[in-house]
Image (cartoon, rainbow over all chains, first blue to last red; front, side):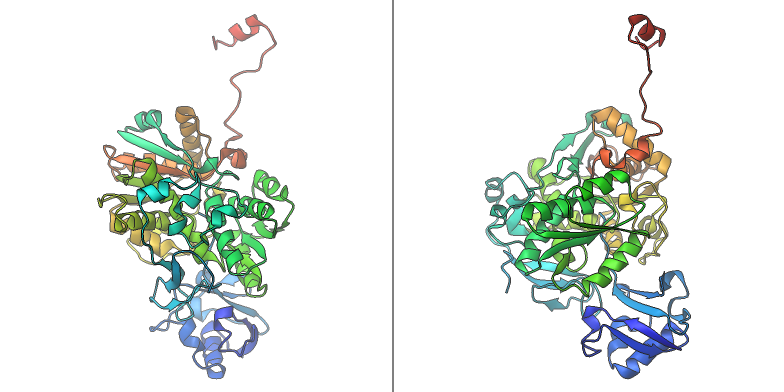
Length: 92
Length: 409
């Protein structure tokens, strides 16, 4: 399935400055693998040594934070927007 | 290189990777949060005491230009440290102080962090001061930008308390309400920060500088106690940044020799309807499981708190604890603080007082030790929380007989 992936500023060195790229995959895991195939090194920025999402990365499929869904196994239907965002928050 | 005083670099809290001072907030290696590193020399109690009665007395310990105090700003900080004897009696504590940050220019602790963020952002070349906010930050950013003569752009959830909407809108900056919760607004701001290069989202792309502003709470408490640390402190948790920075401030003061090196405990306070850090603490976990918030304490309603893991570290390292209280307990605590000390706290203050009570009742906090609690904001901004229960004693005709008939004489 082809999806659109929003790339945060700190990862745009891997995508030649592109803020949005296309990728394919049935799940987030496959989408990240496909990104890695096209943009070598990007997966290691998003995943830790054990292959889990890094603690300070938020990934959204559509409007849903994948931590509330099935994590890396979250389905990525055709045309969906995937967003990779550094985890920051305001408040106290 | 920007001139940010004694600040020297940004260092990742997760992996230790260092980068030069600049508009960076997430580590390019691991996405971890970047923190400001310093080279501080020659700071003494006397040099601080000679400074202005606001946060700029601590400018040598903050990432700001040396002339920061001369540039128009809201001059936040140096708020009251109230000796709260009657509240202490009510709770069975031997000594209690309330650090009352409702006395800041826009009535919350956010004026501190925004003051530092604004000073750093200007030095880094940003043109617009922006933020996603649960309300208090919106007030602080809109006001500080107005005072500085620059544009502000503020984003809040549309279901925010009406008082916080009005007290932001009045400064006449760009102000957008978003149909979603705070975490949705935060996500939008994070994405916008990647597109708008000259916009400083204070708690996103200049977050390393902004967050340092909370250290001034810790510095002030120590100075106002006569240059010593309290035995224990109770701090509200939203993103967790305030708590970790108060701890950092205490550590810095010890390292600089400005206070005696003695143990202190840091306690965290959450509302039950948004208690991901409290839940992780109680479960003995290091990882925070995000939640969808549902609480009247909207200023603390961050379901995915960025500094949560570091809060757990600070609390466990110092031997403190984390508790959470129900919305009913929050309202009761707001009234207790008002009744005993004449301080009208916002819901976050109610959370902190409520948790203090719960910690004492459960034996997790030693009532014989000196305790400080943070009141981070002003009750006038969260009137809805207490409106159902805060009412006049009676309504009467204008006569003595009518008053006597009420039994209130």
